[in-house]
Length: 155
Image (cartoon, rainbow, N blue to C red; front, side, top):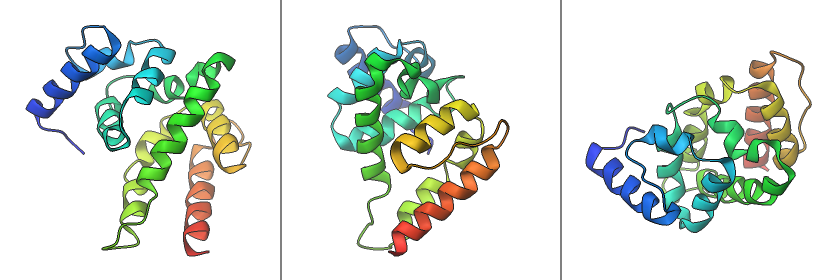
């Protein structure tokens, strides 16, 4: 989802106030320490999380790792909280169509496939109890995640 420039500007201004750092472009978010990014996410209401993810998407390397707390124990709680909240939003069924949420998840496929397998393994194990996957098995991991989501959606 491409956000209009004025919306991006307003979001970055708001995020600057919350972090106490000047954020002039989405790439600035990727340069924040993992803990600062996760604390920013914690301060945001749930309906702002998709906008944050939209700004991060394509803004630079290592974003997924930052959201995982860079595998630091001190960031684990913040990371788990972020993913629980975000998954609750994007996987929540809408009244109009029970497959809208799955469409949204599918739209994140290319982002998922670009992540390091170590980050995918940690994330999938913590949230779904799935894995581990061998090196360069991002496609297999995606297929298993997709199958898991479809099964749990139809349960």
